Amino acid sequence: MGFRFFKRIKIAKGVSLNVSKAGVSVSAGPKGAKVTVSSKGKVTGSAGIPGTGL
Image 1 (cartoon, rainbow, N blue to C red):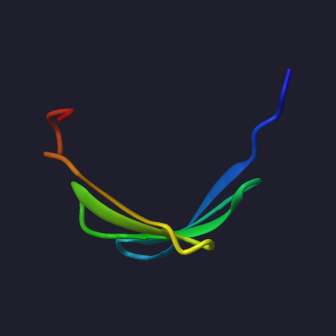
Image 2: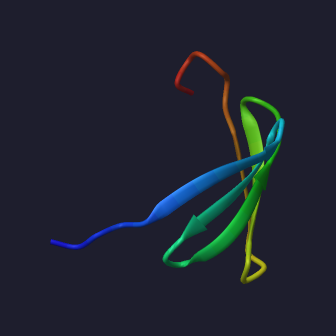
């Protein structure tokens, strides 16, 4: 059985620092949308409608 490590640290409203075995990333954005930048330079984004699951 493997172990997983993940920790999210809130820096400011809408901004968080994510730490895991794979590396460090920063996520930012309002509720329902966010952009994540990893320590390797990969940029990903996601969007949804809060409260609907979509």
